[in-house]
Length: 105
Image (spheres, rainbow, N blue to C red):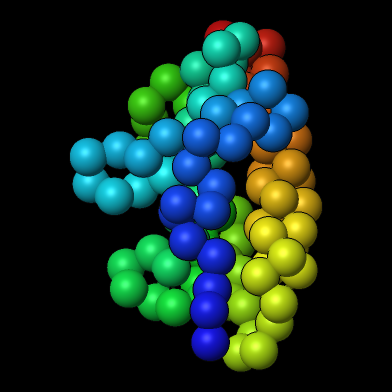
């Protein structure tokens, strides 16, 4: 079974966020207008087909949102669509959390 990899998404731009790999092998989606990192690394920790989605604001603690586990045999194009749809949802959640953080300060 072939799963999407970091190489399939690294360097893409989605909703103004660009993916880059950090030194630890994690994939961070960052936006020039927000101090948010969306963590979404395909096959994280050697788990084929598993992608945890989390975010941090201003480099603070990671907030885990969900993990998707792709079923064996799912076409890579469908996997990529599932990944990007989930990523868009997590981006919205993180941006709202960042706005709430600013309002509460």
